[in-house]
Image 1 (cartoon, rainbow, N blue to C red):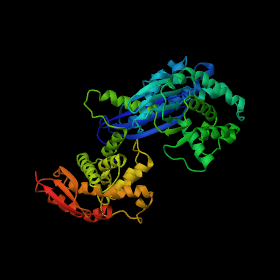
Image 2 (cartoon, rainbow, N blue to C red; image 1 turned 120 degrees about the vertical axis):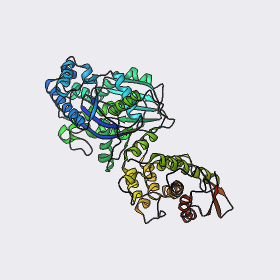
Image 3 (cartoon, one colour; image 1 turned 45 degrees about the vertical axis):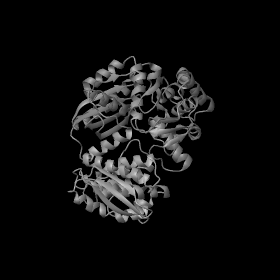
Image 4 (cartoon, one colour; image 1 turned 60 degrees about the vertical axis):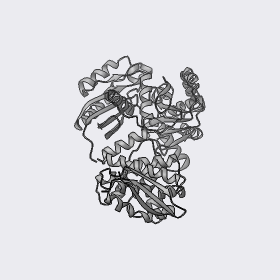
Length: 519
């Protein structure tokens, strides 16, 4: 994929259990392209929470992985490596030994951050990848040494805190060296530990009830995957939802097995088998204390929070329009695909004008949700052209359907991709697999949106912005007028629109005529 010109920056999150790397090329405050992201389990906190210091073997593993990550980042041209360390490092008496080794051997200036800063960055990372609307959410990250809990909305957090209860910490304190099943009494002892550690925090956070919850971390991802595979016999999906009831069943299954059998449970990463039960105890307890019935799995966390914090600081002096998570994600993809964003913005604006006037004229009864999907599809309808202009609608379909567009669910991506696919040439029919894969409601939406988009695309066929206004006007039960505001020299646009009269008839049952108001 062609990447936008700009600085390459790397971000490293050194946790108690794993090290994570993110390398991006930055184009603007809202546009960046991910070059690579990596994750390695190093168990930095192994044995620390009893001994009070990092063990030599753990330091050695960590420095080796961080050196490899730094070399990888620099091979991509990273001019900066922003790196932070969390619970295991901040609590260790000998953390200076680790930090010095990272400077000398990996060339990394690692910052140790507080629990509150870890929670803030975690919030930035998760919230930048979900669409909350006006809802208040709980954000939970079950780490190796600590668990971060945040309450907030799309724009800012209301309250946040960090509790000294993580999956590696609890494993060290309760199950270290044991390969036996975890009995009920021992499991309840872990839950009491978490409850006591979190008591003041959860009491305070309950004052801000959340209507939805998001969870970040390998622990939560693995518990959701076990629930999907072992309990429901299906493959996990992106943005999996884990109910409190299923979490309890998964925890019971996992703790009832000896370590060797636990490693074989479908959905569980074998290397997490020794810490997954303590992790489940933490998540069960926090969900109960906050009265959460389900949690949505997020792939984002502190690492992505570092990126968002960096962008906010680097572009603080610029006047940047406020964009939603969806808008930022769409803009990033458009830039990554070298799309003509001026043309895309004009097509999107014209499509929305057609959508609104068509609704007023009684052509459809779609609402604001469908309108927003049309808006973003207008920005992305041509992204496939960077692969090949020939049949670029097919490439656009694939890119939209499979790109990591943040803030959209799978149904929304399917509708947007199909709308982009049918913005050229043929009208959607059941024989098209891209259309047949949708349910009846989604098919009805695509039939409307693709016609509006193809008309809007034709109205900027020359990419010159000649047509400045477009609206539908009712003209009896069988006819509709498309009124355009444009100069007389826009013949190419008019020819393009006339080709869509057939599609208008199929979608709306009206015969379309075109009128032009000269500028």
